[in-house]
Length: 169
Image (cartoon, rainbow, N blue to C red):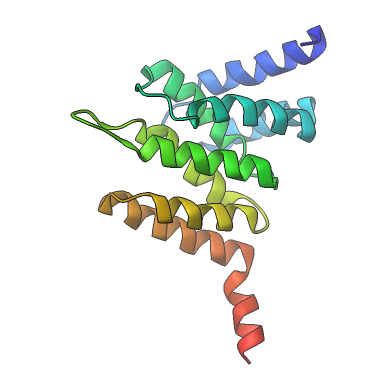
């Protein structure tokens, strides 16, 4: 990685490492948007897809909390970006995060929830489509209910219901 790009990427990752909670706060989001802009959209999508994709590639174990927090925050960074590959990667990670490990529970509900947050917040229809895929692949009732709510929010945000109503009239 070129030194300038590396410096910008590390600045974003550092910012991701200081986030906490179940959803991002506005001051964190403002700083995050500026840091993502410094990378440029294409570079950010490529790097985020690579990092989040590594989690979604069906590894067997759970992550330690520090790594889970970092990936959670990195997923939050994807919320305003409309990109089909990134949306698919987030969906893979959500499915993998909700996957149950025998005797332990979900691999990382924290990462899965952050990916769902990003998908429901994405502009356009890529997030909606991928949320539907996540819902089809997750079997636990508690997670399915929250996924239905996220999908409902995403369809309203993307104007899907308004489009359906126009075509039905």
